Length: 226
Image (cartoon, rainbow, N blue to C red):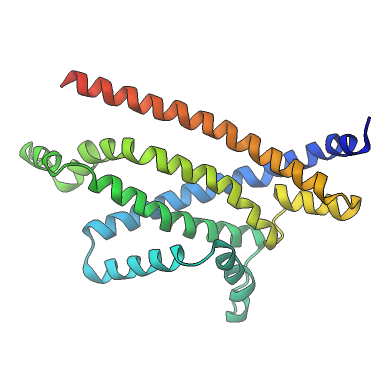
């Protein structure tokens, strides 16, 4: 067996283990927290008072206008100068949540705004409050619009978690770096890490396709009932 193939076989489990133990939980927690933040920011942008709207607009502008890598460096390496010291994993989690929240808030806001005003008026005609109209009428329809871009954001986040390696979080890429430092075979190790990211992304892309198809069938069924 070629030495490079033996190295890939020997290193596959350590890399996959790092993905399952760190990359996957980091992705799920970051996306869940970012989605909650994004929803709050979107609602403030749409219905909040002017001072809060200005604050969240500044937050979205700041996060979307600066690189994620720089944001992670500021949180992990910069904040200690201000007396705020964070461990690598919480620092990465905060950075990803803030980033996901800013980008996905625009997705959610756009999805809500895409719902015709007639849907709101129909809900109000049934004596629903704004909150009830949002929950029962607007959000179910907006979800169908938001699913594809949110799914794309989730898949991108899986790959973006590789940036956590610069904070010494032992995820897939960090594990590959450590093995490469011992074996002096960076090309083989980094290629294998890329393949594992590709496997994760391919599985999620297939799940995204099925999810979009299911939402599409639901939409067709709903239209047929009308």
